[in-house]
Every structure is written in C-alpha cells, then in structure tokens.
View (tube, rainbow, N blue to C red):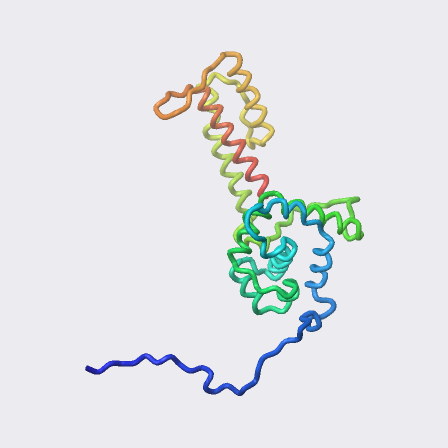
Length: 255
C-alpha cells in the first residue's frame, strides 16, 4: 500500500545565522517627541487607588492598573481597539514594550477583563476627571468659553457609532407627519381640546402631556396593563404621546 508522508517544512534550513537583538533599554529607540512618552509621563502622575479598589480581594494581581491603563489608552491612540490586537502589539511594538516596563505581554483575556470589569464600572470616569484636571492646571484647557457648532465627529473607539445629522432630521420630519395624521383623531375620541400645529415641537408635546395628566387626575381614570387588558382611549393617547416625546428627545440628541 502506498502511503503519502506529510513532512513538516524545515524553515530554518536557509537561515543566515543572524540573531535578532534589541537594546536592554527600549526607550532609546523611541524619539523624544513620540506621543508614548507624553502618555507615560501623564499616566505616572495619576492616582489609581479607585481602580485598585475595584479589584477582587482574591487571587494575585499580575499586572498593575497603571500598566494596563497605559497600554489600553495607547492602543486607542493608535486605533487598536481589539484586545487580541493589543496583546499582539505588546509582543511586537517597541512603544507598547516601553509601557510594559520590562514585563511580558499580557494575555488578551487579562486586558478584556480589566476593560470590562474595572474601567467600565465607574473607575474609568475617575481617571478621566484626573486627566481633565491635569490639562486645566497645565493651561491646555480654557474654561472661559465653550462653542458648539453642531459638527459631528466620528469616534475611533467605535466606527459604527457615528450618526448622520441628515438621517436624524429625516426621522424628525417623518415623526411630525405621523403626529399630524394620528393626533387629531385621537384627541377627538378622548374629548381633549388641543391645537395641533403644522410643526409640533417637543415643547408642544410636553404641554399636551401636562394637559393629559390633568385629565387623568380629574377623571380618576384607571390604567390597565398586561396581555388581554382593554385600554381606554385616554390611556392609549397618553402612551402614544409619551412614545412621541421619547422619540423626539432621541432624535434631537443625535443631531
């Protein structure tokens, strides 16, 4: 019987004998004006006690909160969001090695747990406050005036979080058309007198809701909930207006 042998390729057969080496101090290979140096200097001045307090009292802490914070922030600066890619960068990128202070690259699970279980539970907000305070003290932030021109800027942290102003305005237009079509008939059935404008603003809907709540209190109307329950005309109107107000606020916030 003929058998085919799958031999492992010998990739070292043609090696030239050169051994890769890097200096003991990785920082000498990093330019003095590299952003990683600024990040490291700022991170060294921050207080990590709030983050350290969020750690579990059980088990051994292999990597300090300071080091994990540094590599996460630097990863975001370089548009490296995936924890697996951050782990890979810690093994290959000299700037990440510089931030690790001689330690081996952390596993992506370690980075993920730190980001999910520690930073996302309020401790990260404390670090942000410290950073802003440092920038104020350094004179890099002027609090005398703040101008907002409505410009939308896409965040590198999540490329799918960008919301186009044009799309939100279109949703508002459709919502207004639906309100003009449905509201007059619902008001008539509920016996509510209210002027429906050509363009219903959020303030108009809130004014209507205030009037509806007064009607509910006046008539001592009882609302019912659950499958199979028959809702009154007034209850359906209140719930519809609440839904419109909620959508209106959402669309405005995204413009």
